[in-house]
Amino acid sequence: MTTEHLTDLRAVAREYADVLRASALDLDRDPSLAAALLDRGLPWRQLVGLPAEYNPDPLRVRGRPVHLQSCVEQVTLLEELARADAGAVLALPGPSMSGFVIAELADADQRDRYWSTVAAAPTWTFFGMTEPAHGSDPGSMGTTLRPADDGGGLLLAGTKRYVGNGARARLGVVFARRHAGPLGVLAALVDTDRPGFTAVPLPTLGLRGLQLSELRMAEVPIADDDVLGRHKSATRQGMWAATRTFNRYRPVVSALALGVAQAGYDLVVAERRDLRAAQRHLLADWAQRLAGTRAVVLAAARSADRNPGDGTLASAAKVRATRLAEEITTSAVRLLGPGARWDHPLLDKLVRDARAFEFMEGTGNIQRLTLAQGYLQGRLGDARAA
Image (cartoon, rainbow, N blue to C red):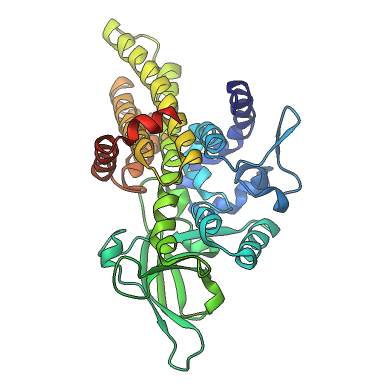
């Protein structure tokens, strides 16, 4: 993946970013307008990363087809789109996190079922892991998969919360406990029109376009061929795939946070002209840190492409990008003076959006633990070399 190719990809992304920027405040006020983004000419199939066999008209960069199957390409494109509106990026139809699970666990029939559905029409998907009382702790997972009383398949029961696009999704992946112990968690491919499945949107302050939702499952019928990873060993099923998914998605979350940080910086540069010396030094520092964080995110993406089992650099990127997004957006309020959030509604949105990334795919403390473990086990040097 050459620097020239990524530079060209970033330039193409800027063309589509204007569509997201124009609707950012409308979508923030009313998350149900996500489908309206597609009416504005946004080529969703080209931007969400469909496999080549399911996307005959991919994104093209200098005439070259780009299917966005690598994490490096994804973070490059999505950072630029998030610079316009991270909420809109997350509100786009497509595979999102569930696509990573499909890539790790699905057999040929499941893969075709999933991608045929996602590619046929604008289709939202979900990734159901987090629970109200237990977060993403697999040892405390309360959602269960048990055999049906009549012996015909399985029944899925439990509640998942803070699930992106859950209320508008057509299908997705739910993690549930089948047996006790660390290998007892399985992943199932679930259609949202099944009996016993309901999803309700949750009120949020930031990234409102994502429409975080609560999934409620009351004895939802699950066929044996809905269970992902049945053809794999017990050590290569539910939580193994979830860990690799988190490691691949954290660079994406980092890129989204970086886009918000860059947007905050851009706003200050555009609106504040009479800077004192200390403030000019602050902006220069931000510019350097934005560039440095971008390099870390790119390194994390390369590491994820090379080895999704190692999340060391992904955790480092998320800590750095999340912290920078919060710092720049909150400092921008002070730099632009009293009433800044009222005078600049987009800045108000950026401040609220920046806070959300801390809680996506593990908080900062969890990331620091992962980073420390990677360092102590000698993985940091290997990851940086990737």
